[in-house]
Length: 105
Image (cartoon, rainbow, N blue to C red; front, side, top):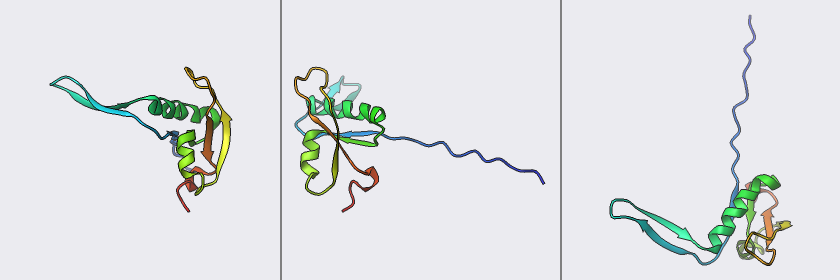
């Protein structure tokens, strides 16, 4: 009888950056093709947090404004204080202790 080697399934990794604040929402494009989009500092911070999830080995990073909304319901851990390009102060970079349990009570 021959042995069959089974290789493990590839693992998909996901990183998410969450922030909260005001944004500008609108449609851009032409009469032939319109797309909805959001822009603003809130979006830029969330996008940068998402980009840093890999650097910090975390699935989820919350911006300071998003963390303020859930701080009293979930355990959060300070990951780092990072000065983002174009900013003068370092907002807190926070994360849930376990991403799988972030939204469980």
